[in-house]
Length: 158
Image 1 (cartoon, rainbow, N blue to C red):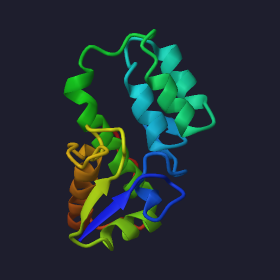
Image 2: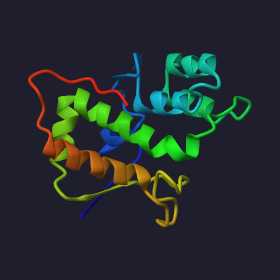
Image 3: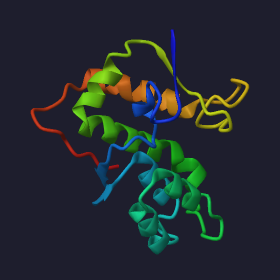
Image 4: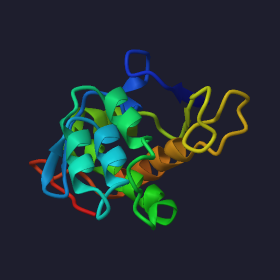
């Protein structure tokens, strides 16, 4: 069976990077995984823009600001973006133990980000996308199975 998610308000939406589950990573608190991920594009190139992304109220604002190409992306972005996403997603499920259990409860089901427009992170409108976010969620699920939670949530860096 496959689990399809996209919008945070829909079933399975807690898997979305836009879900309202904050993370503490790299010395700061981020309201959502999306905030962290979008800001990471500007590490070393535009720290003021990265901080502005961290402070916006909504993840869609963070996404819009992260796509603003009037700010210079870090030169290694294509090489590191998957690892940055993996770190943030792992932190989310390591921090929020209720979500951790919900992810583990998906068993071995395939997880698919059902984005109609994103052919890298999601499956795209026709299903031919790479579904990298779904793959990372399945990788995180496997890692969480191998690493039972401590008595208190851990903080992980990258």
